[in-house]
Image 1 (cartoon, rainbow, N blue to C red):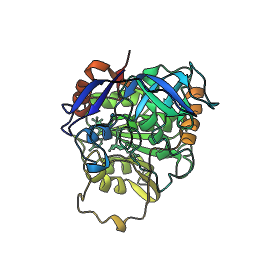
Image 2: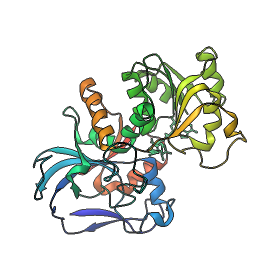
Image 3: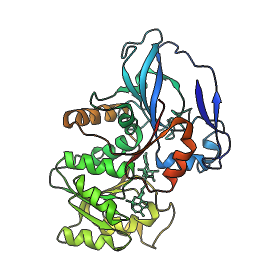
Length: 336
Ligand SMILES: NC(=O)c1ccc[n+]([C@@H]2O[C@H](COP(=O)([O-])OP(=O)(O)OC[C@H]3O[C@@H](n4cnc5c(N)ncnc54)[C@H](OP(=O)(O)O)[C@@H]3O)[C@@H](O)[C@H]2O)c1
């Protein structure tokens, strides 16, 4: 089989494609033929060495993939050969809160990931693909979609009519928009361009704000909510957005701290503690979260937004394209 490995932490140029033996599944494990995988922001960071020694050189990148089971080991009961499945982001996180002794890095960080033809996975660390989704669509779910799902409902339920702010048009944010609409929430989405704003509105965003032409987007959120502020802000920007997220909130708002697309430290000199809104740190989510999310996806026949698909042989180009942040939704690698 073929597999990409990170031989140097120099970005996409540090990937190398190798021929290696196809593994076989031991007891309670299955062999999955990966048919598509997808990119998340952190995968680009991993290629750059941003996680330091926590990610070992030589690792197979990418947490997200989808495929079909081609062999099963002894004792496997949850799945059979031919089943269409996705590995969960963190193989040791099945339900509840993430155990403290489990690495947050998951597949493609702590252990070899999905950018290869075959992967052996414990049957407990797989979920079934909703029937209406292609392998490419399914490959977009394990990290970004489960993260968005957890950000919306992980802390407390989202109620119809509540106001959700999403930031940008990356994987997590677009899923957050799609799911927030499933819950009947009102969604205000920020983005860097008017063209992307139009696409966000087509996906159901009730209002959009171009944060380049309107850097004080928090003021617009306040205007749009008659001074009340958003109920839930899915905060993916970090230092570059956090202060404005707090200014878009009220004392009862939730701010789901998800990412650091716009910087990881300091920022705008705001006093974090002087604001009353509660924040909570969300991780990707467990198998239970993934399966709950899939029920909603299947019932509503929700389709992930795929931006562009690259052939497996052009995986480094997929990283280059992804890093340029021109995408709208998910970037996929086809293993066909
Ligand atoms: N905690 C967890 O377990 C977890 C799990 C998944 C992801 N994350 C984190 O969540 C973040 C999003 O990940 P992703 O994979 O969805 O990213 P992605 O697909 O790479 O998102 C890229 C998009 O982010 C938007 N963006 C960039 N700077 C922005 C800013 N200042 N304000 C608003 N939007 C901005 C841009 O969209 P526009 O051009 O439309 O603005 C850009 O196209 C990352 O920091 C990631 O590490 C955390």
